[in-house]
Amino acid sequence: QVQLVESGGGLVQAGGSLRLSCAASGRTFSNRYAMGWFRQAPGKEREFVAAIGGTYGSTAYAASVKGRFLISKDNAMKTVYLRMNSLKPEDTAIYYCAARIGDQPKLVGADYNYWGQGTQVTVSS
Image (tube, rainbow, N blue to C red; front, side, top):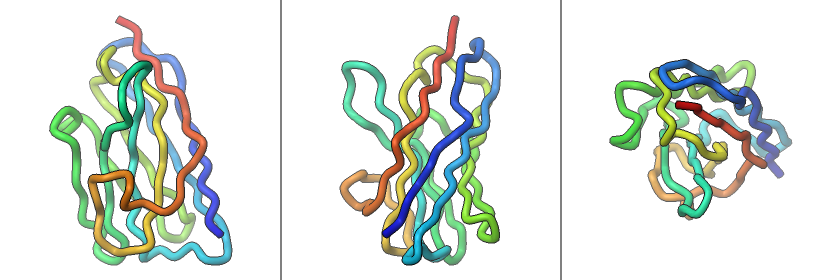
C-alpha cells in the first residue's frame, strides 16, 4: 500500500505564496510513479492542478495555474512539492496529492491510484 500525507496549507493573502508538500510512504511506493495535485473548492468538482512524471519528471499544469505554480519532487525524500505563487482568492480549495502506478503524468483523477487526505488552502482578498 501507499500512503500520502499533505502539509503546508494555510491562510494567505492574495498575492502571497505557499508551498505544499506531499510525503509518500509504503512498501509498494516507487519513485517511478507519477504524482499529481488536484483541488476541490466548496460546491465545485475536483480539478486537476499539476502533475509530474516518474522517471523523467515531465510536468503538466492546468491553464489556470500555469506560470504561477511549480511542481517538483525529491526522490530521496519521496516528497512532491507544489510551490504556489501569486495566489488568488479563486485558488481557495482543499488540495489533494495523488499517485499513480505509471510513469506518465495524467490530468484526470480517475487515472490515479492513491490519494492523500488533503490540505486546506485559503486565499483572502
